Image (cartoon, rainbow, N blue to C red; front, side, top):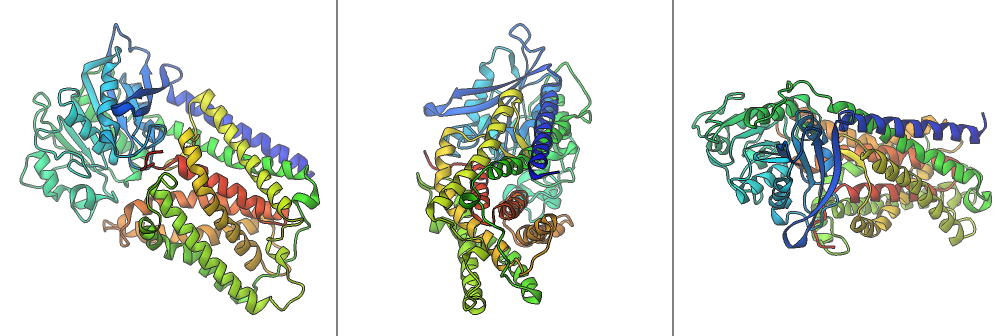
Length: 586
């Protein structure tokens, strides 16, 4: 089969995965059409535009108002993260408003303002004539828990009960809890939650029952008993602790954690449908968006490949260059070093980022400021080591040129410019596919904590601030993988080359996560601390896996690093800017 036919076949498979998976996700999300899913915008304090998704069961109407639930995601997430909860609540007859907190998703920045957007969102939910105002529950994960606690304090008579998952009262601007505030509170705090010191003041989540802070909220002087109901639902003082066996981000992917919240809302709100909490279908929607994600990533290869096949060879492509990289034991040692440096610098460089790049209109996303400091730091270290190796090994060899490292520019700026345009066009195809899916199915490409979703206009502008630093990083990474670590006389298949480069790019992060999570899952604290950055590393594994495959494929196709580096820079910038918080007004 020739290259064109193979690429068209891959394109067909990618489209089948995208639209088949998205169709499955839509079917589950709407409960086969019986739940209306509607994106909404509403104005909050000081004109802050808030974004949300409403899940409206067919039985909800102005003539028959139904119980309502406000569902709120955590830090550096968005409303889609709460869809497992929203799907299950809506199946049970609750009208659900899942919001983007301020500075997240499509809600106006900056983050943390206006009580994270919680009070305004509760007001909006209560304004809907098909919602029973006397029968409203609040649910929030992590920082979303602080959001709903803040909303409860602002509107003490505006809700009946609350579930906080992986969260707490009295943390980071959230009001302190007592034995009567919030009303009818369930605390779902997982057995391996990474944030127990921050949330409840215990070194390990397995000790949360001993937390003085939690005991105060439960009105007891002894260890809180899991599953026991403290206080009275009728008086609004009911309390219950659940500790499912999962992690902080795992709350979104746990039938036990989701079931606990369902059970509590069914106990404390008056609903007609008492569908068992264990009867859950949300994971089929997650499977659908994962299938679509696989199809979306896969589409990059035929989109770019077919474009390149039709391009002028001497302008965009060149004959595959000979390898002049390291061989033998030195190559294995250098590969291990290349895998180790990114994880050794991962925490220190991101910790140092606020002192290097302050929040501003130009760089308004704190998490991504840390990412680009890490990326540029690693690019500098790699470039220096690359230069030392080149000048001590290959500089005197007249047969070695930039072409052997994938860095030649052909006929100069024109070759680089056309390569950049080809890379941008390749990602644009994926963006168009995501836009079609969002329009037709109201879903995106995601699995668990990793997502590819559309940018807001503000995020699109922000992307340009982070794009060039990441492009520089991926050019250096390409030279490392396809120059220094590509041995002379290379005969590896494309699959083997992809696997090898995946180990170099991603293997270190797998080790880092093992170092952190093996002790955590044994009941110990994270040995290196940094719970937020550890969870972020889970997304690095997914994103850098794509990077390794894209870089390898397009270098094989092009003989140069420019197209692969562009695709990776544009894609990674898109994903990280759309998926985190904006802390500065833009």
